[in-house]
Image (cartoon, rainbow, N blue to C red; front, side, top):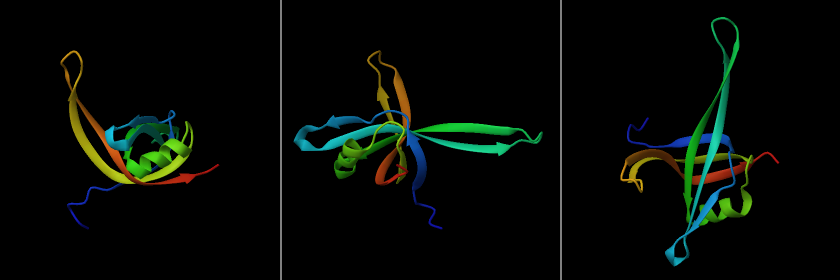
Length: 110
């Protein structure tokens, strides 16, 4: 296994309609989040369910596909890489975010 590979694969459902940003030069950026769910039985035999939310960004042609075909609750599979970045709020606070840069996506379900 290559120790220097940054690769993520997820299957989940969109939490909201994607946010599309039209950039200078005609390029597009799509931002959206997907939920992944899991369940298991704990030591007492009770079913435990959990949901994780993942922030996704897509650029260029992938963003155009997102804009044209994806809406809230659609199930998709994505492949991409983890990206960590920071930004400053209007109030001057430094914030950190982890998101997945989507390189490939596949629409699933109906």
